[in-house]
Length: 314
Image (tube, rainbow, N blue to C red; front, side, top):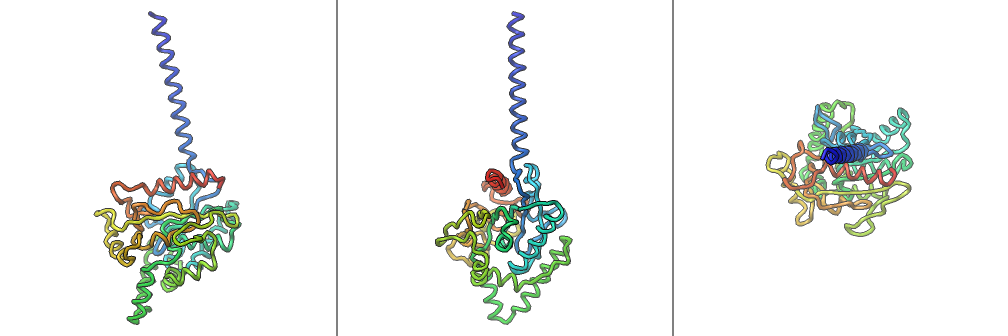
């Protein structure tokens, strides 16, 4: 009887050790889940910022990626500027990181106008870019910019509207601690209209879809291209930004969109998914993580993408 009890205790202890080891291995795996070879750089969109107080543009995303082992940077380029000007600012930032820390390449992840911004860097300095992932980016432009440009032009208020937006961009940059960033609302508008995007795509064609609303090449000049987007407008009654996105979504007619960018316009490189139940701000986990009750977790998307890049040796 004593022998049996002793043997049982030994087996229980052995099982405890095995479970503890398995939990330790699982914890170690999670600690390295997003540990990419090259740093991840999160690039904000129009009227964006790195952070205002405790509120990051990519709400909760940098922290989650770092917890999984990634090195993450969140540059603050101009809230309002052309794709080329924002791209030059981002390129300068990456060059500073390379000089300071010796990084050779970067994984760029851009939201909205941050997508074309990242693509500009990949076009002019592909040797510095390992991958470009875009979320809800208007690669083919957006009808919202088309309507604003047309309405302002028809009413002769282009200068006035641009001044208002420039003031808003300056206020955001001031609050974010980057008051020196120039603001150019007309440059932004010129980049985000369908005609402006078409011109930019001639400059930076890598990853462009080869068919209407299709995918493009994933690997071009050593850079991998991915894209994703949401197709919802109003997702949470508690989110005060939803009414604006519901209103702008009506400009797209029956075309699927996230409130500011159409599903097809978001396509670039390999399309990871284009039907998330997110609106344009949900795509970066704003505002404050509010989204549809049963929708996917945006933060997990960025974790999964980082893990995908890790698997590719990037």
